Amino acid sequence: MPVIVQKSISNNISFSIWSIEESLDFFLSNLRLTKNCEVRLDKLRSDEMKKQFLAVRKLIQLNGISLDILHYSPEGIPLLKNEKNISISHTKGFSSIAISPKPVGIDIQDFRDKILNISKKFINSKERDLIDPSSIKELTLVWCIKEATYKVIRKPDLDFKNEIKIQSISNNLSHSIIEVEKLGKKYFFESFNITESDYICSIVQSNE
Image (cartoon, rainbow, N blue to C red):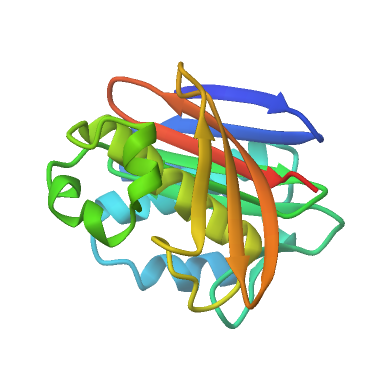
Protein backbone atom coordinates (compact mmCIF):
# COMPACT_ATOMS: atom_id res chain seq x y z
CA MET A 1 0.00 0.00 0.00
CA PRO A 2 2.09 2.95 -1.22
CA VAL A 3 1.13 5.76 1.11
CA ILE A 4 4.43 7.59 0.82
CA VAL A 5 3.57 10.47 3.18
CA GLN A 6 1.15 10.56 6.09
CA LYS A 7 1.83 13.21 8.71
CA SER A 8 0.53 16.22 10.61
CA ILE A 9 1.74 19.80 10.62
CA SER A 10 0.79 22.87 12.65
CA ASN A 11 -2.80 23.75 13.51
CA ASN A 12 -3.88 20.12 13.34
CA ILE A 13 -3.48 19.81 9.58
CA SER A 14 -3.01 16.22 8.46
CA PHE A 15 -2.09 15.28 4.93
CA SER A 16 -1.41 12.12 2.97
CA ILE A 17 0.11 11.32 -0.41
CA TRP A 18 -0.39 8.09 -2.36
CA SER A 19 2.02 6.95 -5.06
CA ILE A 20 -0.26 5.18 -7.54
CA GLU A 21 1.25 1.85 -8.58
CA GLU A 22 -1.83 -0.37 -8.33
CA SER A 23 -4.27 -1.49 -11.00
CA LEU A 24 -7.75 -0.08 -11.35
CA ASP A 25 -9.11 -3.44 -10.18
CA PHE A 26 -7.14 -3.12 -6.93
CA PHE A 27 -8.95 0.07 -5.99
CA LEU A 28 -12.35 -1.15 -7.12
CA SER A 29 -12.02 -4.31 -5.03
CA ASN A 30 -10.75 -2.49 -1.95
CA LEU A 31 -13.26 0.35 -1.75
CA ARG A 32 -16.95 0.54 -0.96
CA LEU A 33 -18.04 3.52 -2.99
CA THR A 34 -21.09 5.63 -2.28
CA LYS A 35 -23.59 6.21 -5.06
CA ASN A 36 -22.29 9.75 -5.45
CA CYS A 37 -18.73 8.44 -5.85
CA GLU A 38 -19.86 5.91 -8.44
CA VAL A 39 -21.58 8.61 -10.46
CA ARG A 40 -18.47 10.83 -10.43
CA LEU A 41 -16.22 7.87 -11.27
CA ASP A 42 -18.32 6.94 -14.30
CA LYS A 43 -17.78 10.39 -15.76
CA LEU A 44 -13.99 9.95 -15.86
CA ARG A 45 -12.66 8.74 -19.19
CA SER A 46 -9.18 7.34 -18.58
CA ASP A 47 -7.98 4.63 -16.20
CA GLU A 48 -5.31 7.04 -14.95
CA MET A 49 -7.93 9.59 -13.87
CA LYS A 50 -10.04 6.86 -12.30
CA LYS A 51 -7.09 5.58 -10.27
CA GLN A 52 -6.31 9.12 -9.08
CA PHE A 53 -9.94 9.54 -8.03
CA LEU A 54 -10.03 6.19 -6.22
CA ALA A 55 -6.67 6.73 -4.51
CA VAL A 56 -8.11 9.93 -3.01
CA ARG A 57 -11.08 7.94 -1.66
CA LYS A 58 -8.70 5.36 -0.19
CA LEU A 59 -6.71 8.10 1.55
CA ILE A 60 -9.93 9.55 2.98
CA GLN A 61 -10.83 6.15 4.45
CA LEU A 62 -7.31 5.66 5.83
CA ASN A 63 -7.78 8.94 7.71
CA GLY A 64 -10.82 7.46 9.43
CA ILE A 65 -13.40 9.40 7.43
CA SER A 66 -16.42 7.76 5.86
CA LEU A 67 -17.06 8.46 2.20
CA ASP A 68 -20.70 8.99 3.18
CA ILE A 69 -19.84 12.46 4.52
CA LEU A 70 -17.91 13.56 1.44
CA HIS A 71 -19.83 15.80 -0.93
CA TYR A 72 -19.22 18.68 -3.34
CA SER A 73 -20.44 22.25 -3.58
CA PRO A 74 -22.07 23.45 -6.82
CA GLU A 75 -18.66 24.92 -7.69
CA GLY A 76 -17.00 21.52 -7.33
CA ILE A 77 -15.32 22.16 -3.97
CA PRO A 78 -14.96 19.00 -1.83
CA LEU A 79 -16.66 19.27 1.57
CA LEU A 80 -17.14 17.08 4.63
CA LYS A 81 -20.38 16.88 6.59
CA ASN A 82 -18.59 17.38 9.90
CA GLU A 83 -16.44 20.11 11.42
CA LYS A 84 -13.40 19.34 9.28
CA ASN A 85 -12.24 20.89 6.01
CA ILE A 86 -10.75 18.83 3.18
CA SER A 87 -8.67 19.64 0.13
CA ILE A 88 -7.87 17.19 -2.68
CA SER A 89 -5.26 17.15 -5.43
CA HIS A 90 -3.79 14.67 -7.89
CA THR A 91 -1.33 14.56 -10.74
CA LYS A 92 0.26 11.88 -12.89
CA GLY A 93 1.12 9.01 -10.53
CA PHE A 94 0.05 10.68 -7.28
CA SER A 95 -3.02 11.60 -5.23
CA SER A 96 -3.11 13.69 -2.07
CA ILE A 97 -5.48 15.06 0.57
CA ALA A 98 -5.26 17.55 3.44
CA ILE A 99 -7.69 17.71 6.39
CA SER A 100 -7.96 20.51 8.94
CA PRO A 101 -10.40 22.23 11.32
CA LYS A 102 -9.67 25.43 9.34
CA PRO A 103 -9.81 26.01 5.57
CA VAL A 104 -6.83 24.29 3.95
CA GLY A 105 -5.50 23.86 0.44
CA ILE A 106 -3.26 21.21 -1.10
CA ASP A 107 -1.76 20.92 -4.54
CA ILE A 108 0.52 18.26 -5.99
CA GLN A 109 2.26 18.42 -9.36
CA ASP A 110 4.64 16.31 -11.39
CA PHE A 111 7.28 18.04 -13.49
CA ARG A 112 6.50 19.19 -17.02
CA ASP A 113 8.66 21.23 -19.39
CA LYS A 114 5.70 23.32 -20.57
CA ILE A 115 5.76 25.29 -17.31
CA LEU A 116 8.76 27.18 -18.72
CA ASN A 117 6.52 28.56 -21.46
CA ILE A 118 3.55 29.52 -19.30
CA SER A 119 5.37 30.84 -16.21
CA LYS A 120 4.90 34.48 -17.25
CA LYS A 121 1.16 34.00 -16.77
CA PHE A 122 1.42 33.29 -13.02
CA ILE A 123 4.78 34.49 -11.68
CA ASN A 124 5.50 38.17 -10.98
CA SER A 125 8.80 40.04 -10.98
CA LYS A 126 9.35 39.81 -7.21
CA GLU A 127 8.83 36.05 -7.29
CA ARG A 128 11.37 35.72 -10.09
CA ASP A 129 13.90 37.18 -7.66
CA LEU A 130 13.02 34.50 -5.07
CA ILE A 131 13.69 31.53 -7.34
CA ASP A 132 15.65 30.42 -10.37
CA PRO A 133 13.17 31.24 -13.18
CA SER A 134 14.83 28.68 -15.46
CA SER A 135 14.22 25.85 -12.98
CA ILE A 136 11.25 23.59 -13.74
CA LYS A 137 11.24 22.47 -10.10
CA GLU A 138 11.12 25.99 -8.67
CA LEU A 139 8.54 27.23 -11.15
CA THR A 140 6.41 24.20 -10.31
CA LEU A 141 6.76 25.05 -6.63
CA VAL A 142 5.43 28.57 -7.24
CA TRP A 143 2.46 27.16 -9.15
CA CYS A 144 1.75 24.62 -6.38
CA ILE A 145 1.83 27.28 -3.68
CA LYS A 146 -0.52 29.57 -5.60
CA GLU A 147 -2.94 26.79 -6.53
CA ALA A 148 -3.12 25.59 -2.91
CA THR A 149 -3.62 29.18 -1.73
CA TYR A 150 -6.49 29.63 -4.17
CA LYS A 151 -8.17 26.54 -2.72
CA VAL A 152 -8.04 28.08 0.76
CA ILE A 153 -9.35 31.54 -0.04
CA ARG A 154 -11.95 30.42 -2.62
CA LYS A 155 -12.47 33.85 -4.10
CA PRO A 156 -13.47 33.80 -7.79
CA ASP A 157 -11.42 35.55 -10.45
CA LEU A 158 -8.23 35.74 -8.42
CA ASP A 159 -5.29 36.80 -10.59
CA PHE A 160 -2.57 34.25 -9.84
CA LYS A 161 0.19 36.61 -11.01
CA ASN A 162 -0.77 39.88 -9.36
CA GLU A 163 -3.14 39.04 -6.51
CA ILE A 164 -1.57 35.87 -5.08
CA LYS A 165 1.92 37.08 -4.13
CA ILE A 166 4.60 34.91 -2.58
CA GLN A 167 6.56 37.09 -0.15
CA SER A 168 9.28 34.63 0.84
CA ILE A 169 10.52 31.10 0.23
CA SER A 170 12.92 29.40 2.63
CA ASN A 171 16.36 28.40 1.36
CA ASN A 172 15.43 24.71 1.39
CA LEU A 173 12.07 25.51 -0.31
CA SER A 174 10.12 23.90 2.55
CA HIS A 175 8.18 26.98 3.72
CA SER A 176 6.79 30.16 2.23
CA ILE A 177 4.70 33.18 3.16
CA ILE A 178 1.96 34.33 0.80
CA GLU A 179 -0.06 37.54 0.60
CA VAL A 180 -3.36 37.74 -1.24
CA GLU A 181 -4.76 41.18 -2.00
CA LYS A 182 -8.31 41.37 -3.31
CA LEU A 183 -10.73 44.32 -3.31
CA GLY A 184 -8.53 46.33 -0.96
CA LYS A 185 -8.21 43.59 1.66
CA LYS A 186 -5.08 41.59 2.42
CA TYR A 187 -4.93 37.96 3.54
CA PHE A 188 -1.80 36.14 4.71
CA PHE A 189 -0.97 32.47 4.38
CA GLU A 190 1.83 30.05 5.14
CA SER A 191 2.76 27.02 3.05
CA PHE A 192 4.49 23.77 3.89
CA ASN A 193 6.21 22.36 0.80
CA ILE A 194 7.53 18.93 -0.11
CA THR A 195 9.98 18.82 -3.01
CA GLU A 196 10.93 15.39 -4.32
CA SER A 197 12.57 14.14 -7.50
CA ASP A 198 9.25 13.24 -9.14
CA TYR A 199 6.70 15.59 -7.55
CA ILE A 200 6.13 18.77 -5.53
CA CYS A 201 3.33 19.21 -3.00
CA SER A 202 2.25 22.35 -1.13
CA ILE A 203 -0.14 22.58 1.81
CA VAL A 204 -1.41 26.08 2.61
CA GLN A 205 -3.15 27.43 5.70
CA SER A 206 -4.21 30.85 6.87
CA ASN A 207 -1.55 32.72 8.85
CA GLU A 208 -4.14 34.86 10.67
